Image 1: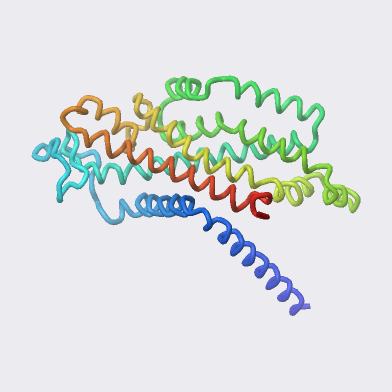
Image 2: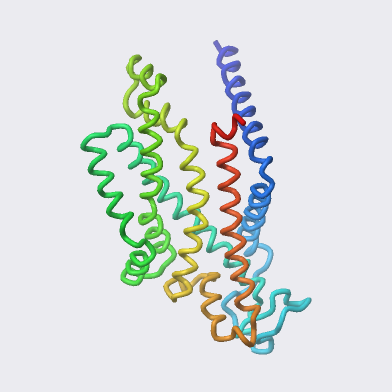
Amino acid sequence: MGSSIERLSLGRLERYSRGLRGFWRSYSRNRPAVMGLAILFLLTATAVLTDLLDPYNPFGIYPSEVLLPPSFSHPFGTDDLGRDILKLVMFGSKTSLLVGFSAVFIASSIGIIVGALSGYYGGRVEDILMRLTDMLLIIPNFFLILLIVALFGSSLRNVVLVIGFMTWPGTARLLRSTFLSLREQEFVQAARVVGASHLRIIFRHLLPNGIYPVIVNSSLQVGSAILTEAGLSFLGLGDPSLVSWGRMLSIAQMYVRRAWWMAAFPGAAIFITVMAFNLIGDGLNDALNPRLRER
């Protein structure tokens, strides 16, 4: 008995290992996607290690170093308060990644539940959930997020929750369409015949076979969430207790002719980060899409 369980566990581990090797083989063929993944690892390491490696105070004032151009001691220059732009960009990476991943986790969780239920059950359940989804889709997201944050406060928690709760409809519609094409397949009919429960069919059979578009879409949504947070901070509605690339750009407006570096480097950080997630999404599509994988 013990040996058979051990063989079963080893067999599963071997299948997972083969699956991961196959995924990486497909993903690594897309060189730009590998570059995007490398950028993400660098940003994550920067966000995690910034506080540990450098006890720099990003809210300090250094009068003797105001508006210094890029140099060996300050590679990205300094801002109007004498703060090092490179260190501010590093601190800002933590805020951007935290908002991006947290908001997309919330949006994906809601979207998966709504899309799975509407796509599997259909009928009245689908009508109710899709009307709610359509109602949120026709409202301009950014302006509604702007209004809600202005009314309820601009703390990091509020920003994450609002972005997450306002961006799930795209995921829901995407998964619903996938479930509609899968729910009449033979493997689903076989699961029904053997008496599998609805929840087991949804989460054990349908979701693993239809999740790849959601994964690709979520990687793109991270970049969108980072842009939304930067836009809120640019307008003065970001969390004032955290360093944000959008807030840095907002301050840089007043000094753009005297100190171009104040806007150039946080702007480049936003561009590179969003580009990295778009490249990763393209690579995930190549690696997870069964039609592309068969070529």
